[in-house]
Length: 256
Image (cartoon, rainbow, N blue to C red; front, top):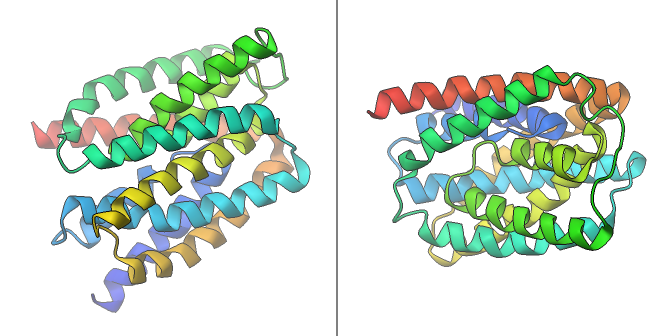
């Protein structure tokens, strides 16, 4: 790999860590960069390698958030464990399943998420918990399983969907939702890494090198989010949703 190519990947990983730490959606930057930078490698290897900087950056962001924003650990664990199982199942199918089938569904969901969030400026600015404790736990467990499966088999936008579901279903404010999503995202990344490692689809040297850049971006992003609070996270969330829609629309057109 040339120095220029590596620097390109490192810059992308740093920006991905920043974006993911604030509102999720780091895969929007990092995965396409890897697909471009190491296009001569098998897709499962690229997907597996992508998870290494992701888990380091997400863990760094989660630690930063935890100092200022204390997530509900019971709810987080209830969502994270099914997400781990779903991620393992998704990663096992990643090399056998054409990810292009996700494009129309994910695009539709992202458009709906963007419109709903944009039309409700008060959404996620204050915490307004919904449902009873027991019902809430059952709901987040099911959401965790589905999102984990999606992250294992495809990935882009996982953090964004987690944040939105925690805001719209649970009733969290954006900042707390983002902090909780980081912990759940660690579980999905870990499950995918276990599966890709078993099949030998991780380029560890590259993944660990990019992890350093991702961590720096995550530190900057999480501190900015804590300082700006839920209004800033909401604005960046809408930007990430719009960028994801544009990216997936372009990819869908190219592959058709």
